[in-house]
Image (cartoon, rainbow, N blue to C red):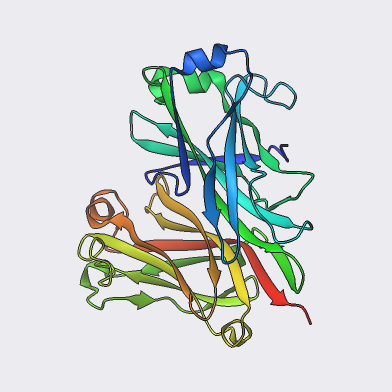
Length: 317
C-alpha cells in the first residue's frame, strides 16, 4: 500500500481542500479491537471522472507495513467509483494533514519527490506508513491531540484516468535551479497597477509568468485591498490553446522573508487549457502579515514558483 518513505512536511494555515476527518475520543479508537478506521466516502472531480475515496487510519501504525511506532494513513479508491470500462487507471498525487489545534495550523505531509501514483483494479490504496511518530503526536505541546480529539485531512490531485483514444504523459520536473523562478520586486509600497507580471521563464518545456496583485485581485471581493494575490500563468502553447489538449502542472508558490527563516508556501496543481490559463491564490497572504511578518526588507518582495510535475494529455490518432 505504501510507496517509498521519503517524506517532507511543512506547516500552513489553510485547511485541507478536499476532506477532513475529526476523531473524538482517540484513546478509545486506539484501544479498539480493529486496528484501522475507514472514513466515510468523499468525492473528488476532474474533467470527466468523479472519484470516490476513503481515508484509512491506523491509530497505532500499520504493523503489516513499516508503521510500528507511528500513525499510518492511506487513501483508498472506493469500489463505488464508476468507470465506463473495466480497463481503467487513475494517476493521483496527494497530501495528508494533521491539525495543530493549539496554533490552528496544519502539518502538511507528502512525498519529497511529489510522486504520482498509479491506482488500478488490483491496487486501490496508497499512503504513508510513517505519517507521524506516536510520541510526537501525543506530545501535548505539539497540539495534535487535544482533549483526546484530533483532525486529519487530505488533498488529492487526480490526473485524468487513461482510456481509449487518450494518452497521458507524466513528467517529473528535475529539482534544479532552472525550474525555480525567483522574482524580486523592488519598491513594493509604490506599486499602483492592479497586477504585475514577471518575465517569461521555461519549466517543463513550457513558458510561464508569475503574476501578483499587490493590493489584491480586484475581481475578488475578499482579496481586494486586503490580500496579496499570487498566480502562475501559462504563456503561448498554441498546441494546448488551439486544440482540446490540456496540460497538468503541479508547483509550489512561495513568499520568502529576507533572512530565509520563514517561508509562506502553498502547493497546488491545475489543468491548464484554452479556458484556464492561470491558477493560484487570490488570498495568498494578508497584507497585514506581509508587512508585519518580515517579508518586505528594503521595500522588496521576493516570490518563488517551483515546478514539480508537468503532464500533457493528447488525443490518440
